[in-house]
Length: 81
Image 1 (cartoon, rainbow, N blue to C red):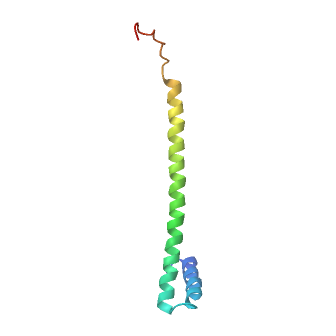
Image 2 (image 1 turned 120 degrees about the vertical axis):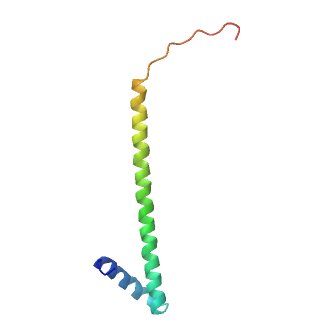
Image 3 (image 1 turned 120 degrees about the horizontal axis):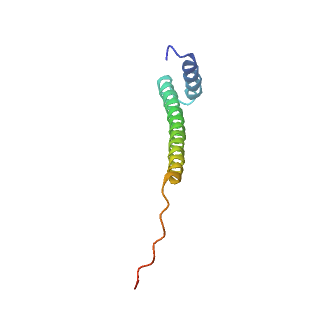
């Protein structure tokens, strides 16, 4: 935290907001909890985007493989079926 001024500022702002309802130590704990929740939300969105791109790439590759596949000749229907 000491090397990240933006984090320090966010913790200070959130702690000030939470101190109106709770004590100082509890306010700091809640501030870090809120930051943790924000980081988790952002990580979830980034993971969703990564998954989307991986699946899109796989679909494009599958479509490309369709053009490389041989066409099969239609078979004649078996007698008696």
